[in-house]
Length: 245
Ligand SMILES: [Fe+2]
Ligand SMILES: [Fe+2]
Image (cartoon, rainbow, N blue to C red; front, side, top):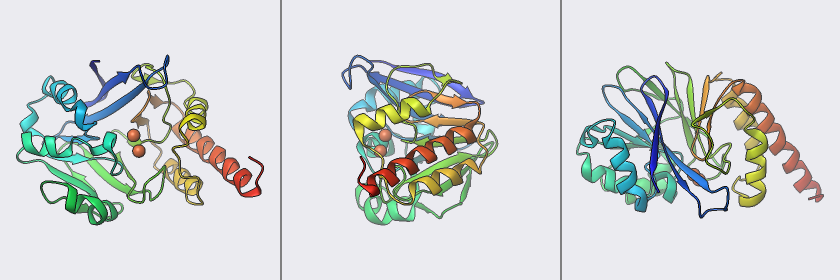
């Protein structure tokens, strides 16, 4: 396995590791995003066991000890499994996450105290502005959240739009169909009442880029993609409630 690096925006790097053994032959990618600024930020730490690969990839871009912020969607191994490894090699790094994530998991599981972010709070990392947005239970996890980088209008949407394969770093093609196909395999989305409204609200940010944790990042009509995904979940929820699935 190797970790591929692509700059998907100005000083925004996608680190992607394809694991062919997960749902072969397509396989599955685990992506982290490094946002450079005066205070560099990593979104998703990668799996604990992938730390050697991911940290080596980061070191090709910047000195890993200079990492300042570590954040991720929710408490889960691929999102934050390597957080303590990162804290160990980057002495000034701090985890930043929402209130629920900190109170439920991170105050205990992180080796240093996290910074608690309120919904909508912005961290100015010097050259980039990172807004934290609570998305409880969307796509899964009580503590779930996403980040939005305001200057590049990049929405780091974590597990939303998860799809299989080792596609290009950036696509303008359909990501909704592949996401629903993956959903039929993984059942990874909490199909509850908050899913569609929350996804629609993210469209209000008018992102230029959707940076996905699993699959290609998307540029194009991001609002349409988010609305189409929301509508698909809406239909699936209604069908489940009606007992027709
Ligand atoms: Fe997840
Ligand atoms: Fe994930």
